[in-house]
Image (cartoon, rainbow over all chains, first blue to last red; front, side, top):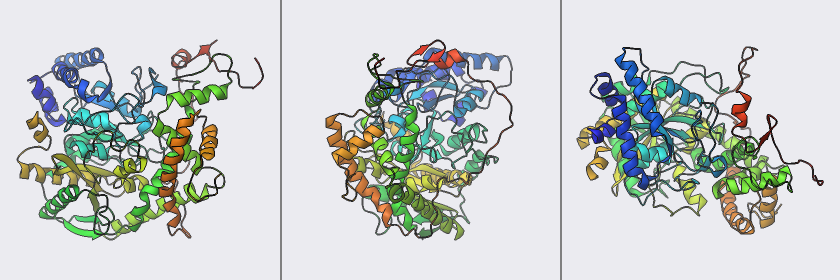
Length: 505
Length: 103
């Protein structure tokens, strides 16, 4: 039973818990046992507190036995990316500079999951400050992909993707600035959704690029992702960019989509993301799996059109100016004064010197590169040519989306990433090659739009994701179309996507 | 800074690192200058975009002032906040001297 419990998706877990077939303690223990047995190899968690998790679970079981009213997710385990601040629980954002820090408060995302009755299993590994596409930039060692331990699990939410795909958590929170939920989900065979910017509170997320950062679900099914989004989403007065609008019924949209009828839905295939004349850098196996997915959408009744979004060609250039610029400012808070590391404070050095030594030892190479690049892009004399111009490109990208959606397209689709999971070590010293993993996910990030990645097949035995992008606040379309694709894929395969990985074990 | 378009010299990187309060090593200066030169060449493509009369987007969501009622809400307890500090003294954050002269 124990191994079976870690294979269940959340919807099935909820039913088993509500029906009394299992208890929260049993479910939690099964996951802790699995972590104990296999996370030595995967390194998906940075912190696990089994004792607290079991105590939380026991309290849920006690309250259930007493007939008390329980939260919507009572007894369901969850893992949080280590960028999410958690009250009294170590939080590092993958960096040495925060090693050993125990925050004095909960992020809104963590608080809402807690209030819903979830059991926190632990905090997951990540690229330092969410900068990276492979989790190799973590100060605490790389995470490995459950499909092939010599390959990356994507990033920056690679600890979350490996934990969920590796059956060490039923689902997890990721954060996405340029693709950090969608790309790791794609390369590990998960569903990952980046919500509309402002749909999920950023309060208590350690900031990387404030105009882009969003937290969202990483799960094994579209329905589970929709459920988590409903629980964590909605207005939060503590985040001034939080949208004050009711969250659409995402679970219902997923259920509707799973019925498999996309008649009347217009799907736009973005030419600039792997289409004719733009396939350079895309693996043939990825494009083939993507085309299979598009054919399935057509077979479900969708009208498929090719759409051109010419400004998307400049998304990577704009993103790698805007994100480092915002990061260089955000990361100035790590000054060795209020929390975290302090180096060289021996009485002989002044504050500036201590700060520079602390940051030199506390930050890894990619973080330093981005701080330096961002500082350059914001410098007097260069500001207009780089940062200012990048922001204008951002406007053009938003216009391309508006034009496509204005022409009657309901959703846009593309591969989620140009390649399958690449070997660990392959791109570490080549920043541009690393950045190319985000090619397809950056446009929706820059425009603040919702986008989901859903598995659409294997290439060389490794997972490929299909991305569905929708207009702002139309996250329900991502869930509807994503669930339709998932249902068609499962039917054609005769089982779930991750069932293929479980069968290998 | 370097006049060569889209390249960063070792001195440029050293200057930017000083502005960023990063005490980088000589080895890092060499490596970052090379790597950032390549990145800068790629991101400079934004300058090719047709942006006459295009206004910049700073934020995906149109922002207006967000107000809240002017009422006092509880702050975190002082000892809890100072518990995470690298050095605290007399209920305050302790910082190294901020002026250059001998202490």
